[in-house]
Image (cartoon, rainbow, N blue to C red; front, side, top):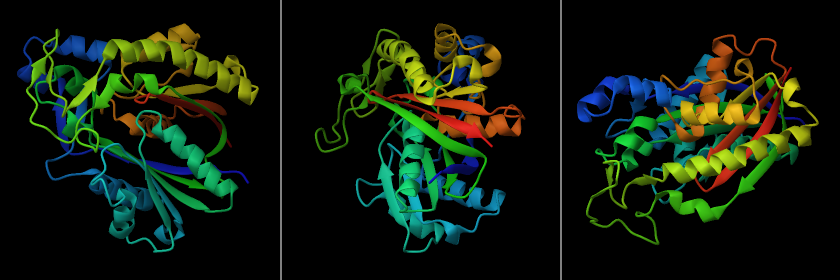
Length: 335
């Protein structure tokens, strides 16, 4: 049984952290340099009392309203997040109640970062193929800002909060979901991590430390080893791209558009050049929201459609990669 992406919507919190505001906090951080290197002009930051289930509720209702979707047609919720409201219960269960969905829906959270959207599409496709669900509400939502130390200029520059909602259905839609390639290497787990807070390392009153670049954090905060993440990505993503092309029996020339996880502009352009993807087949859309983790790909997909960039595109490749290490790619066929 085939599965399709029917519709996409996304939500960004009202609070905006612009490059100008970052410069006020970190005067040594040049505004033009931030923009040119990262490709980010501003990021949206959730409020003190705004959490994952709140953003997920807003974006789901936005999806229903924007695309005239009957919420009673939803029979499964998949919520990708690494910032759940609670350890338990499952945030997807809270979401079912907040949205007023029928109690016969299935609902689960899955904990993945930058590869999460592609993994979510595979889970949704599997539910449809197994005749377990017909209309799946796939939501990605992250509040990474709550993990970042206020004096960590590097991570504050890159990450923004946001959520996206996708209706994946057995009924014919915009994109048919094709094949998948996955990858995992847990040896890189500590290179992008929040060490404290769960069972192994409960929250502690750790002393702040500053790294060689002046970023301040402690083990209660998000830590990212940028050099190691860049090296991993530089090695894994070209191999991933080659693998998904081989699995789909497509050549690079036959792909009309590549949408990668929107990590930062410098990394994306490095990958594009290394793989040999032409500029006109490579989509970047993060200047208005930053790196929203699992939501970057659906946000970029939505923006590409709204700006008419998807016109005449038949074959699309999506690739997510990052925290875990985890990576995944799939192809979409425009009908």
